[in-house]
Image 1 (cartoon, one colour):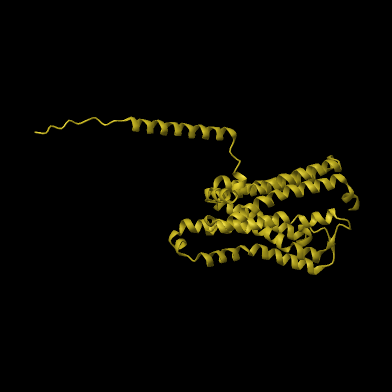
Image 2: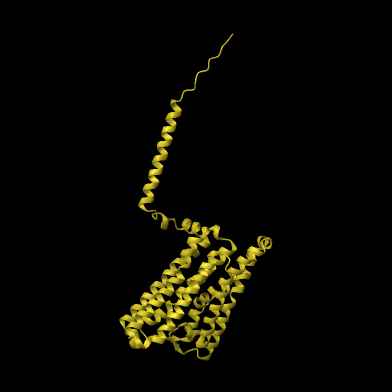
Length: 310
């Protein structure tokens, strides 16, 4: 382990992977802020998407602890108990992403097939109920973590997912994630949710297939080549999961208006010079037309009407 941690290439790939992952942290933070501050995003579905963004942000920052353990001086490991206490919320939030997808899909179906009930329901209690149901998946994860930690709480680990739930638990959760994504994809009625599910499926499938291929043909590559391949796979996987915010911005009018309204400074200079010149030309033409019209009205003299007085 010490040789691996002292390798400049390995440390560089860790920095690149972690940095790319934090692009998603920034994007999801924008979505969270817009959801909190913009009233147009205070509907049930939008609030569920806001909670989804919080969980996605947690999934992005969960890598920070393993990164710090790897980069900082020391053994590169910490007791499993400390790892569990620190990572329980970020990793639990990461898993909540998948159950929230299903809950959001169910919410959209209820809005379509039971419109009268949906419009008269108590939004506050309904939102609480939906979120509590979505917590079932993270609570199962919590059970695995408690079981694994009790077995050997002070075993030194690198604090990866498998260190928290064990190898069997990791396989179970990976299969469950695929099942949840597949269920929601089949029920994805709205194009926004369908696109998000598509991104999740493509990203997850790419990562799984790429890692399996790498493991099968790893003997053909040097350790240096494998580091480059691993770095590329991780970066593509991270970027694919960060695309959800731009997708929402493109396909959801409410989210686009809310983000533009909340972050005006970000879009202030987004217009290209061509668009600015065209806008100025249109304004000049409009002003010229108004000026000519005003002059014509001022010059116009109504015809005189002769009245005969007997």
